[in-house]
Length: 128
Image 1 (cartoon, one colour):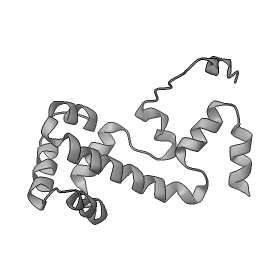
Image 2 (cartoon, helix red, strand yellow; image 1 turned 90 degrees about the vertical axis):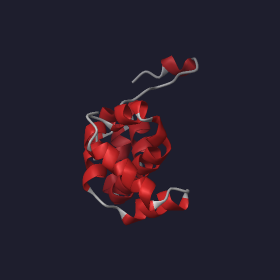
Image 3 (cartoon, rainbow, N blue to C red; image 1 turned 180 degrees about the vertical axis):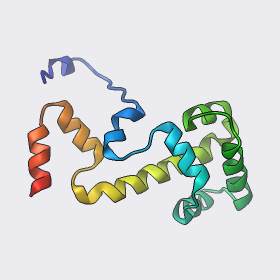
C-alpha cells in the first residue's frame, strides 16, 4: 500500500467491523454479552471507580430492557449510563485482547502493520 497519504496529518476512523475478524464483538454483540453475563473482574473494577452494586444492576437492567440495538446507541440516548457503560465496554474489550494475546501482537499493532502492507511480517512473527 502506498503510504503517501500520510504526508499530511491523517486520522483513520475504523468501525467495530474492523476488529470483528480478530474476535472482538460488534456493538450489538457487545450489548448482548454485557446483558447475558456476569464478569466479577469487570464489576470489581467498576465498583472501585465509585459505582455501587445498585448502580451496576440499574445499568444492566436498563440495557437488558432497552430497545436500542447497540451499546453505542444505548449510551448515546442514556447519558446517565455513559460512564459506567464505558467501563464495561473497556473491560470486555480488554478481556478479549488478553484472550487473543497468545497468538501474537495486539490488535492495534496488527491492524497498523496490515494497513501499511506488512502482512507477511505479521504472519512470519506469529509463526516464530
